Amino acid sequence: MLNYQKTAQAFDLNTVANHLLSGSIDALNACYECCDRYADSERIALYWYGKDGRKEQYTFSELKKYSSQFASFLKSQGVGKGDRISGLLPRTSELIITILAAWRIGAVYQPLFTAFGPKAIEHRIKLANSKLVVTDLGNRHKLSEMTDCPTIVTVHVEQEAALYPQDLSFWTELNSQPEICELVMLNINDPFLLMFTSGTTGPAKPLQVPLKALIAFGGYMQDAIGLTAKDAFWNIADPGWAYGLYYGITGPLLLGHATLFYEGGFNTESVCQIVKEYGITNLAGAPTAYRMMMAADPVQMAELRGKLRVVSSAGEPLNPEVIRWFEQVLDVPIYDHYGQTEVGMVVCNHHALEHPVRSGAAGFASPGYRITVVDEQGHELPANTSGILAVDIRQSPMMWFSGYEESRKSPFLGHYYLTGDTAEIHADGSMSFVGRSDDVITTSGYRVGPFDVESALLEHDAVIEAAVIGVPDPERTEVIKAFVILANNFKATTNLEDELGLFVKKRLSAHAYPRLIEFVTELPKTPSGKIQRFLLRNQEINKQQALINHPS
Image 1 (cartoon, one colour):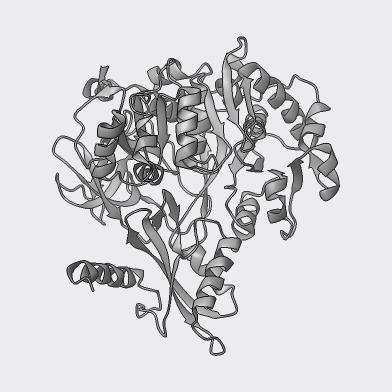
Image 2 (spheres, rainbow, N blue to C red):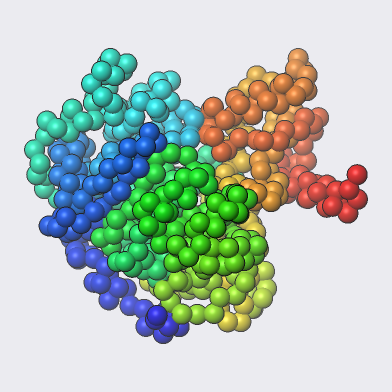
């Protein structure tokens, strides 16, 4: 095992890039790096386990062929370098083919989470200015209400084509194309992904991910995930989000390593089955999934003891009891990792680099980054002092994020990128997460902007005004709570609570809806009229504390 300090101090971007990439900074293609260069052998790229029990596997050679054919089709539709295409697909082979095909011709892939509702999908497609959307029959209806929707390509079998006759058929179009499509070479600063991240004062904001991020993704897979050629790897995060797309698809394929797609829903039975059936040794996911494993039948979970080599966690801080449970019950180390859609994983307890692991700490800065804690004026704070976690751009050669495409507020202060999270850095350089600096809600590993939920609520005739916060929850980290002011002709009832929750769920997404709703007559505001969500949050925390101190 390499020493962390020596690796971090000796970090050289060109050396790491030459190790991870075959192309140069002026001639790079993500499809070649993540597929074509491994296509001369029968190496497996994807293991697929369908929700109906079917199992398939695809070699890099097969993905090269299919992505070349679909890329030729995209070109026939006028898609070219820098154009965006959106993917509203579950964990299927068509998802990876779509992504690789876009990259092959220099286009930019934009993911759409399949649990999103029509409003969230339309917002992203329109802001991305996508030329084409690829979806399946299970999600196709979400595009039906969208005005000026771009060309739709749907994955279906022949007998289902009549359902949406105006759509192009994925496999029909693919199979009509030649198996060779020339790669479009790009500069390392050209984008290959378009992501969206939640905010507090507006809808989700788009950001471009340049090819330089491939170096960071590969470094994370090697150093923090500790992925080796002998590992069987499974990232259970959804590829509609950054962690699943960056490190469940791009990262492993970049290293020539197989990834695994399980199309069914996550539950403890499926975890046990997949770990045993595929011999999974390296597992990555969010604490919500791990807490579900803890709550499962102990006899069932005991079957996994000794099967996993390492486990990684990201999305929200790991609870100490989760760490203890994995050590005692499964006999495997589980390490906490910290990152964001904007910058990737920048603080980690590294499985492949030797350093002390402090209980409750997210670890040390990933090689190629310098992290620090600053005050609101951008002054660095001493050790063990809470402040805004920041990336020192001048001393972070791995940094690739340059800002949002559409946002009035800059996330940069001088030469620092401000994460919006509160943290402490200890004397040994390790970082402990304290909490969010803003109002973004972390629920079940997802970050949800309150503005999006408030906007969805306001579309209902019953709602005049709404404020949304996250309320601490032992299972989900936070649950979403809405404070709602009703129109005069509506009465506060439990039926209306249920109706509003379902309304947001259908409009926005399956995870970003208020599980708790409280009807109020006024909301706390600043003199200028801005809602003071922090007062509502403090009020809820005080209520919870009172119940703990004086249980009824």
